[in-house]
Length: 192
Ligand code: URA
Image (cartoon, rainbow, N blue to C red; front, side):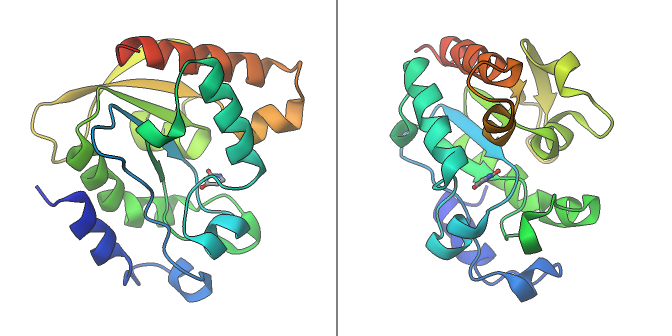
């Protein structure tokens, strides 16, 4: 298995899809030692593309608040994205881009070998459970997922809304409450 740091070094030079042409830099994600939860977002936005770190913008600030509500601290979680380069104008990554980038994400998860994976939003849901799933139907419970190349390890996956959806629907909207509850579920699975 390739180590986290070797993966990050390799992906820094990736030109496997057209997103390489418009990015400032690859955003590989972060992985503190001993992380038991991997959060999988969608793609770097403008601030992440500039800073090289995932979830530093508005979505990231809400994520931190909701993590704290679930007794979690970002500094003990691995945080990655479905694609590692910013799509122009923050559009949703195309299916082909996500497929091209997928081996990086699968290898990152194998390198962390977490107790729980939390997918945030539709792109990460499609990565974990396959295309055509609806978040409303899949969230709030634990899925067992075998990832390509990860021998027979079945990971616990909690699929939930992206913090951007929680921002869009506001503080009293259903996505925010669901996201908070699902992070609590993940924290319990990770023994927190
Ligand atoms: N949204 C994401 O999905 N990932 C980031 O890193 C930032 C915003």
